[in-house]
Image (cartoon, rainbow, N blue to C red):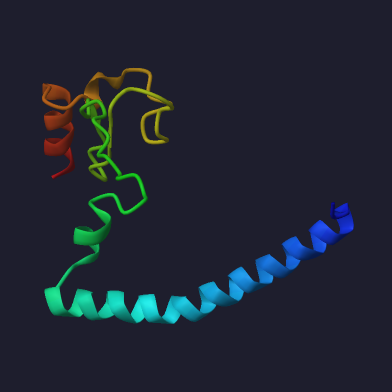
Length: 110
């Protein structure tokens, strides 16, 4: 029966042989694949599918904007931290979208 050291040496030798065999076959296989891709006109999406290993980004279905800054046109949904243009306002009604408040502010600036 072989000793642990002998088996370990055999394993290392086999790993080296496997790496050499893989390297030798690698270029052949790659050349074959490239030739078939060129012949058949495959695309990356045909081969790897839609995701290609990465998750797709989905558009956020956030809340619609409720407030608009009359000066810059910036909007805010009313959720989360208030932007600087509205955070100190005591009455936010004048910034509401679709109300008389925002329309009146626009008319005064003209």
